[in-house]
Image 1 (tube, chains in turn cyan, red, brown):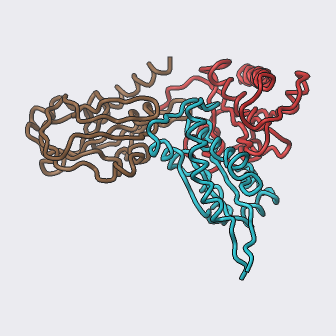
Image 2 (cartoon, chains in turn cyan, orange, red; image 1 turned 90 degrees about the vertical axis):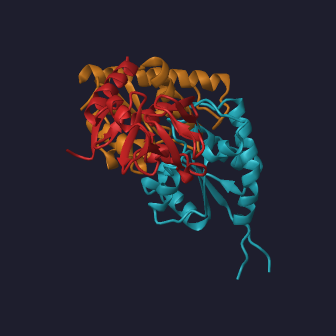
Length: 138
Length: 136
Length: 147
């Protein structure tokens, strides 16, 4: 029975007030552009709130990974407000806690250390993307 | 009990999917930190949407300017939906056209030209802030 | 009186929980049967940012008022937590290892830091502030930072 590869939607919170929002965003871009291009995709979080039909069907028809900056969990909550349960949820603050030697800085734009951390984490999350993307036809 | 002078709230689209979203974010931060510090407050759109008490409370009491990356106008619509109509709704492409600058191509690692475009957009937003404060 | 005294600056609402005592070093104290529960105030957690790591002196250790209880690391800084009371630390919040963010999320509740069995309450209470007095000190700090 062949597995059918799905898209995996990666939604960062993109919080504009903290470095962890920038880290969440950069990690999502690493997944979408470099680590799993063509499989990991993203969309704009606020499109869900304004009931954009394309964004809504993307998160309804594919598994969603929410990458939040902190435990306020804005990305996860925004998806769940649409009646969709996220498949996996992460907090970028924990990315730093797991890699204490890579302290990210920069809110508008991550510094080089932050980009390095995002790249490392994205590699780790690549396997999660693979797992979610693989789907057995029943 | 408020310790407050009049400030303008700026709500940027988070625009993960398009370069104009990243440019909007960068430009809004420049307004906050460089161009109009002490006169502006950044409202985090995702937190605003997810129910952030402080973000919504500020937007209800003080004038807001929204900055959108595309004509879906998420920041403007979400602000109106959740708090009240923004005083000004700006669109990055309109501001770039006014400054005769091309659209950005990168969602991250902006080029020198794109950084300059962000600076130009920031100046446009700062002007809008001035207009709001003058009229208040 | 409500549960909190509140001061607003920009979009931030700084809360002081009523019924607690406070130190000038921005810690709160709640007394229950000879034991003080201690935590950091909403003002302190908001000023310092998201807590990433917490390093507190072990249970069983004697501390004096004014002595360092430990350190909190946030994305912005590492700062000392100064004990507002004297006594023996009988418990450190077990949630802090995995969920240090509780300090940001619920500084007066689930984000408590440690419990201290008091050894000099009569001496300590003279140095602590009522909620309304701390509220005024907090407002001054906010106004100073705003300049």
